[in-house]
Length: 114
Length: 115
Image 1 (cartoon, rainbow over the protein chains, first blue to last red):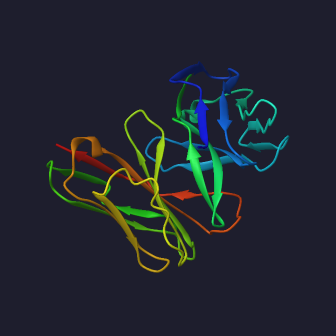
Image 2: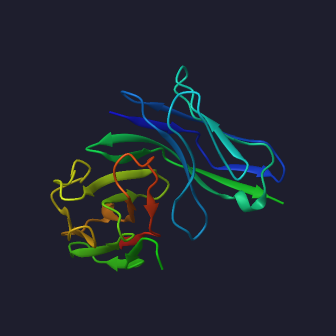
């Protein structure tokens, strides 16, 4: 079945460092890809998405490009802030009966130190 | 508020007891999902409801788990004869349904601890 594998955590960086969190997927067909973020004490929320190959999703300085040839959707940010500390989840859609059922990776905990 | 609401936020129970977890989705959202998040692990799909279609129960781990949804509103997840391995955060999410780009709106979860 469809699956998502993402970089093991936890990841600890200093403020203004460059961030990459790797995500690869296995899927039949052509899923949409997502990054969700869970800030401390809050529910998961969508960070960005890409619906077809070569699309780039971006939001809040984060970017990820849908790479079909490498089945990857790595999350990047050029200069992280303390407020980016959170758990990040990569996910893909498995469309069944017109609704989007999301398959998630295991999550990567990111801590940014001042 | 206008978001997904879950209750209780925390539940501690004894092994063997039954528990019910409740989810109020965003008004108008036809799709509703339950996920489980064990400590240090990813989100595990349990079940989803889409309008009046038969629910997809393919993720329920055992027959001790069941869920119901009344129309396009409230859903309850029931765990019978709880076991310690059921301890987890149970997350509910809703979405407008259809090919809407896949954004799910999550509640803050119900943390279940089975002693």
